[in-house]
Length: 212
Length: 213
Ligand SMILES: Nc1ncnc2c1ncn2[C@@H]1O[C@H](COP(=O)(O)OP(=O)(O)OP(=O)(O)O)[C@@H](O)[C@H]1O
Ligand SMILES: [Mg+2]
Image (cartoon, rainbow over all chains, first blue to last red; front, side, top):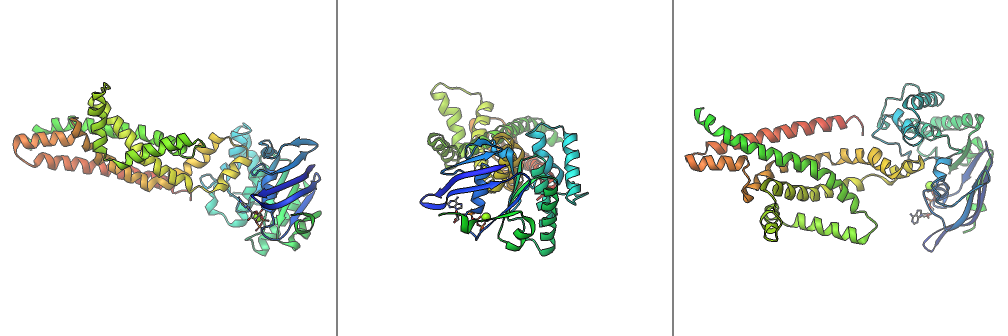
């Protein structure tokens, strides 16, 4: 379970949000919606330790983490809006690079797991391609596999459907549901109210729940 | 033909110095240049200030002058380098400055998202640099790096100013002794062969790097 308590973020004098509380239960899919520029990306950057905050606490399964704590990296995986795949590595190496170099998994085991992940995400036989050879939806699934390969407690998506057509959007929804059924806790940032209703157990509306 | 055979040994001896300066400069200035370019982003003002001063001097004065200062200037204050070592030192510090500027440009063009992704996946700073950032920088800077390498081939001829016997010097000794331009012609052809070799190997590496974008 992820709990965020009393989170306040300012950029200079500009208050992005104040005293934000948010809870994400294990196995749950939570959507965070809200208009552009309200601070959704900022929130997951803080959650994953990429951005600092002015005050607040993060608890994961009851354990407290400081804001910006490097250990948060391992707890929460993130699928960036523009995926940020590593262009100089193949799909397979994008997925195995961190397990091998950070978790010191053997190359063989990492490869096997990566292939299985790609299979379940409908990306069989794509492992030898480079990111530039993939469509947007395919890149996204590689980004999902790359995050899952590190076995985070939670996966967070930043606008997973922006730039995707209706068909790809439905595929993303299917992937999220599939991961939910295997017990992955997910947080989804989106503009798309319909998509949010389609995939999530609960919706967190930034515009209503957040003080500025 | 007979004349060629006469002058060739001298010129080939000169070639050794030329190639020596060329390869040692490459080997030395690449890592030094990377180090300097990383240092430019140091949080410490003093380090940035020193590096900017160093680059300003290296790019703001002729390499010829730097050679003279390192060989003759330093010996006046009691630091004596043999000619070859002095030449190599001058070339390494000079080329490192130019390469550092090129690397800096490459580093700047790596999107912040690459660092974010690496951080979330738990890579250390050095892993991020060597496995993710550097390969992308290398690809980006390859064309301008290639230009510098070609320049280096030709710049090695500047070592004449401190009396180091490179091919150009060997050629001009033969030319003035025998009152003919043929040695210069030979030297010119040798430079062309060297730059052609450099061009071919640069093209090869560019090609190898073009499997990803
Ligand atoms: N590095 C920064 N410095 C200053 N202000 C920033 C910075 N990053 C973001 N902001 C501001 O914080 C606010 C929230 O930005 P954020 O990217 O979190 O919005 P968002 O809800 O994700 O919007 P979108 O839906 O368009 O992606 C914006 O007003 C933005 O201008
Ligand atoms: Mg955003």
